[in-house]
Length: 275
Image 1 (cartoon, rainbow, N blue to C red):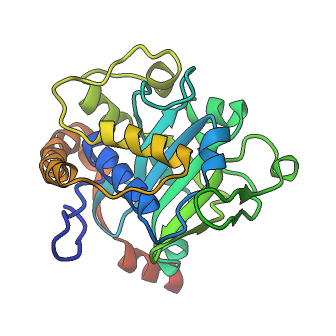
Image 2 (image 1 turned 45 degrees about the horizontal axis):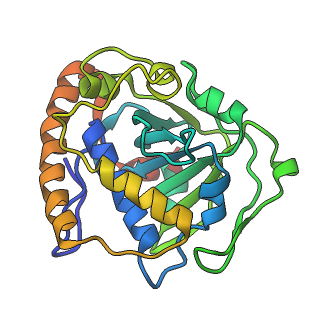
Image 3 (image 1 turned 135 degrees about the vertical axis):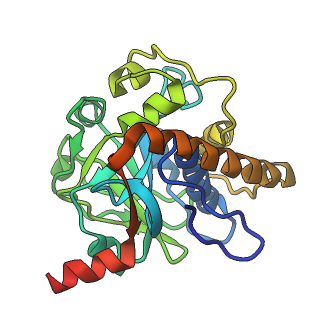
């Protein structure tokens, strides 16, 4: 089941397939590139070792206990992300009330040190510790101001997209871990986050219809601090890729079985509030 969208826009596809996670990652990067909004400061893209893009569920199918799913990409030797195969991840350990109350739609996490990368690529995943407040500078060329020494290692920088604005967001206590069923369905074999991201022993299947090339392109543009709107050709591809993501989700559901559940975030938030 996909999320609703304004008239004229493609609906967000399933949160459970890698194709859907890539589509949603491209969507939030598209918002960050739009002229007229603050966007994301380029120094974070320049300084980070990796980036995580997680979309928060509103209503639909998702992995049990997850509040959102997305992908991890690591920066390559050439300083870009364009050769990084994606690893599917899920966000757990945080209540729906926190996210729904803040109207959070997407979260972009910047992995700023090797310890954080090591945790994300481990089988246990990353438990997010205390996060310092991040103040975004003015525009894409402004800096994301934070104290790297007080932040410490092993802590990503999280920025949430909510109500058309990007801003610092504290996810202390949340856990970011691999979604093995989605990775297996996409790569057609069982593989670990380390094999995908560090050892690079798997390649993106050539027959998959995804928005991954567009994700790479948007990350390069954000690193350069520029603005951009999607082309008509990309808009058409988004529709095709969303359909492919919905079809791929059926395979994930079959593979994961009871691990995939239907969730209404507003209803879950209300349950948390009354507990």
